[in-house]
Image (cartoon, rainbow, N blue to C red; front, side):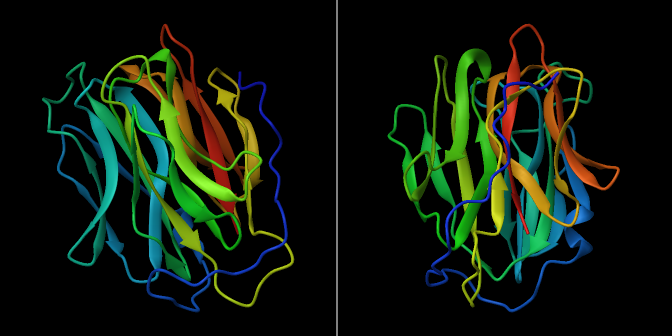
Length: 252
């Protein structure tokens, strides 16, 4: 089962920061319920316009080696979900991912981190929330971790650790529009380990995305995933010989 997680918490009063993308007054709609999927034996998946929309990972699965990854990227005005070079269908080296998108006021550029580097600053926790857009490398042991976090500071960071090779991650941040709200419109879990039972998150009126993954992803059956059930987002997963797990962030 999932265990040992911190409760979801919304933190601190908001002081809005200047936007970094193309601002819009559009509020999030049911768009965030649609899930897009890609597997490494297929072509990349078109997820629609980048105009006032941002997309983030909701599921990561497969056998991650040094040169394998999944990612969300933009091209010619559209969001795309894809990853490393194609493999033959049914290959033990398959990786896959799912993602969801939601309407946003604005969003940042993409931040990057690779093993051996210090954590990458991503700006203040006030007025923005950040989620994963790419993960990759040899995620095959207890020492593997990539995550968005703030700790006890007032800044978001992207970082991780690895005892293997090529582990890296990318992330973007959603920027909230004015006027300032009395509380930050987001909540994050602590680390949650995979097993049979699901972990209930926020109602599906929120949008929930992966904020971190850790542990072993060394077969096509290993995964972590966020999915809707009974009006709530849920987190579940499956581990192989090495435990794995995830962190989730949700935004209103």
